[in-house]
Image (tube, rainbow, N blue to C red):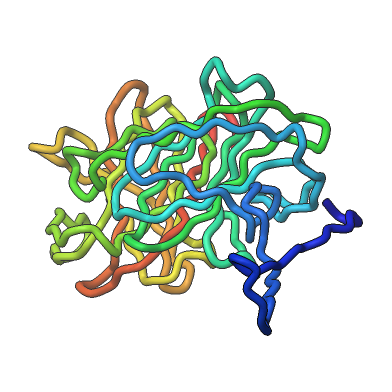
Length: 289
């Protein structure tokens, strides 16, 4: 404990005597109270139980800005697969949130987050890069919200084809993905010749709103392309969308129809263009704007 005095006794075996050198090194406690002391989470589908009750208050630059919160830090090693991360279960007894960070502890960038324990946007969907370390903070909306939680991670094959595209809620959210482990595929290009690139696929079900998918975040580190399809994976049809370039990155907007399925392909704009992206999803009601 801080301020406590400890005494160390050094002796030889069987009354042996002699000179010695005593090395004392300071190491971080792996208690999850800070990023350097992050608690490692096992590979694959797993669960982890802990509590934020004893965690100290700290100002963290979250996805929505700086906030004073109390939480536990975890670190996750990328496997090249898709992970769904959630604390929505009966063992979590407070309004827990999740914030996912890329980078190092000296320079973290929030790339995805949840907005509720159970409800709208209550899980993080991330496609990871093999060997890359990601940091996850379990916290409340403020420094007063604390409690016990069970962290669940469900791992599935990488979503690098239409057939395994995970379904996203069509509501404002932020998703993080890496095409570093994705396989090459050729997709229909709606306004230009088809090219073979690595890409990740997502599925959404229309609700009548105008949807925008954007990789214009500064954390997107390669030249991206986004294409939207309707129909089925066997018979894909190009969706008429409004495209916007933001440097080498891209955003697309399109009008959705109620209960119609759409497939969104996010990849490089040329063969060899691979990397990490942050995809922001926003929606606008047809009755406003």
